[in-house]
Image (cartoon, rainbow, N blue to C red; front, side, top):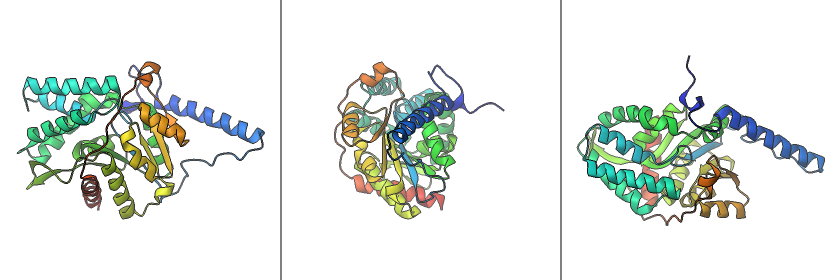
Length: 305
């Protein structure tokens, strides 16, 4: 049987197994140093069997390279959903995301507006089926092995793992399922009779809305947020990271890196040194966060139950 795609070396410096081995060695060294100095070693994390704990992972540039929505747009263009000028706009937005390493709110809003207009009148089932194909074509090879290994550690400990993203919930759910995760919280597009209306339920799941989604899901699932972990690359996700007892900065932008270091949060960077050094300044999130976050969490919880 072939190995899962995220374990297969694809022009990356390390596989998930080597990342796990390296991090385990580093943790063992720190533990040994602490014990030799008479200090108290850090407790094992994640804690096996702690079912009141869960992990929440941002998607874009945390779990995967680039933005899922932009790659989804490329897949729709290939299937003649829109014209070349729209593809050029998606390409420019993705190039900005990769160069700056941060989310530009204007670009993200423009991409969401374009996506909504493109899918208006289309059936949800049709877009879901196409999303499966787009994952294989554009997304499977962009998963960060290091972040995937972190998620697997939580799964191995018997904990649930959720993606939390501004990407459409249907796209996020496909990615979560393909990676073997529990599920996903994402932006909910309104549909009536299984057909998209071109409107959102609430607002995009971004910034404070992610925190509201995590809070709502934790309440529904009976989780203790103080025992949960959250992972993100963006300063925009500080509200979500601050909710949990174990926040991680993954491939962080400059502002989050400083914020995390000041608070002694754990950091992981799986990019090359050149990419990690790039600096960008994300802007604050928009209005309607609570409505968007609650809608996403309720939609996913209802779907599961």
